[in-house]
Image (cartoon, rainbow, N blue to C red; front, top):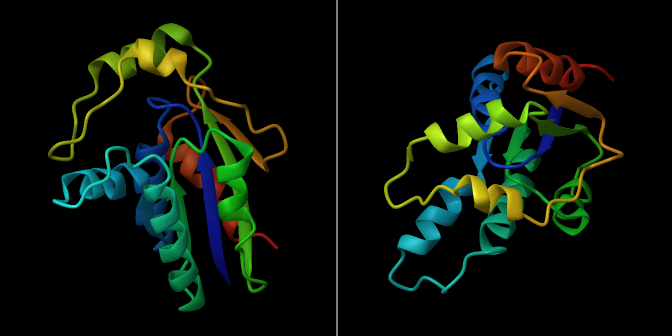
Length: 168
């Protein structure tokens, strides 16, 4: 059975680290919104703001990959119910939907992560700690998994998500 894993969480909580670990473990395709948006913004036809474009591209790719029977991980901030619905509503009947919010409840650790990160994509601008704090982020109360990376390591988090992917 294939799975659609939809993540949400502020920058610096560990979504990409967990997604990469999970993709290596499960063989799922990792769709990272930062990668998509950075490419869109680098285009000569780039819009002034790629705000929803990355999400819509990832959604379209996820539809195709799930139809081809590939599991997919959506790695993005996913800060509003509207964007979460864009992904959760497309889940085909033969795939397992796993929804997961990644948090880091240790504010000092979260800030350290945000301030010590280095861009791994050419042209990608990382948010500052003030940017992260100013986000209009709405917690995902009804998601299946809530993972606090202040308490567990990425490998353990990926293991929890993998277990959910493979459970009916």
